[in-house]
Length: 70
Image 1 (cartoon, rainbow, N blue to C red):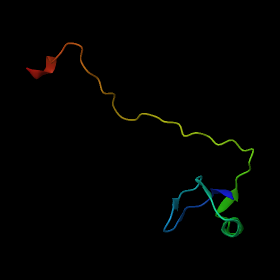
Image 2 (image 1 turned 90 degrees about the vertical axis):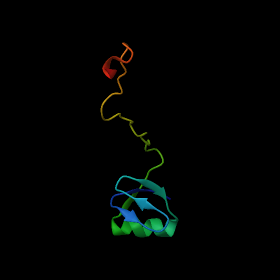
Image 3 (image 1 turned 180 degrees about the vertical axis):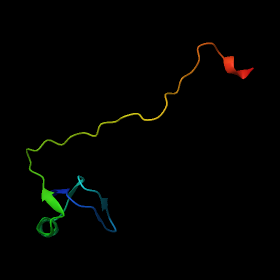
């Protein structure tokens, strides 16, 4: 069963943050839902792709050649 985590959870095979989605067997999924750690993902719910953003300074190259080498 596909679950979406509402709380952080880690174990020997995974490290999940709130909002992460992972498949669990039915018994474990029921236990996590009952404990309030996760919610079942509905089949018709669209999965959003992560948005990639660039951070930091742009890598700017001078068109004048090696102008700063003097």
